Length: 493
Image 1 (cartoon, rainbow, N blue to C red):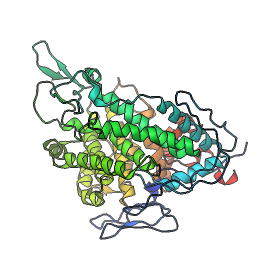
Image 2: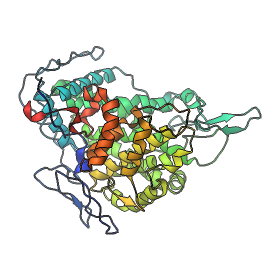
Image 3: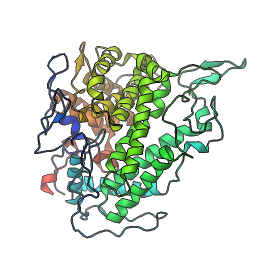
Image 4: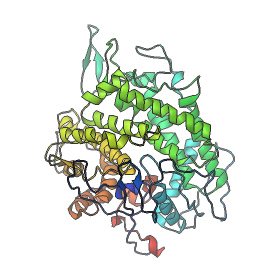
């Protein structure tokens, strides 16, 4: 087998091409290498190197269908109850669309298509990822549509359209009062069922279908994936009988306590993945102008709730740690998808405040370190910071190298490496879960690829704990940045 050497392409590599040269207070920021020179102009319109076209216009024109080359097609399955046989690894896959459908909230479809073309040219690792993505798409086709209005148990609400969960660490005492025991779940949200319907239902099924849609080259197969994803979103968000109300007022409740719960932000985290997936589906014939109008309106309403409702206002002021950053990433994604193209730039001062307030000088996340499970919650916070950095990158803002009072996202990521390798411990009882840090490390290794010491430190973790990714078992290889330690060489294929 050929010795492979290099692959730097990825679905979301906009992190490398959208960094500002300066921060708003004119302090210099280290610029990462980029494939397009993008900077914010006074009118917030991204200036793009047209040779790469990595960022679309504010309102990109969307073709009815993706341009496809005339190639031999795999037979499309007609019965969605059966799995489809996938082209075996090593055999040439059909060519893929050469035009990106749209820019995502977190992703860059131009670079995604480069990865897909590499797969169709015989790159073994990427072809495995394509196969796995399509296999996951067929599994997703078999999943039933689950809407929140089917629940039979609710807490402090009579409206089944409200997303309803209970604060997980609160337990009823013998005298009827409720007491918080950090790290110990009560299982009440599982009884309601809305959390699983979001996280394991639509929050997994729609992204899997969207990735299968872009991975497949068979027009019939592609539309099968898209149709199901859009049908799921139609029922979950839009149909009057089954829609979810665009708010989280009844999430993370403490039974019997009528007070604002700023922790509600964490319940909607999966909605960000759905927004990103929806943008990948815009070239489908099933993604109609009316569906686009209605679904964007739903998320615009959610963004408005996060900004202007009593709960949203309190969350803005009072949330800290992972909850605060999850709030920021959700609000940014919903506002941008809903049409507020100036949101990210206007919000940047508040994001800078959070970075300074929540990180220690050594990179530790102070609000998570005293938790019962500090490792898990530190990773949840980092996942949210990375997600926010990706969202801002699409808007031309560099969070990756931003420093406030000597604190930075890079330091926070590096802080975690020895803990994830077991070289240090935050406490003596928590079991370390490498998968918590895996995607953070992948993305960061690319984002800081011009920082050799950072790359080397992250590589220590990835070489040990990212075997499935390196061998193509994980289809997210199509959507996440990575560096050449995987031993790839697209040019030699």
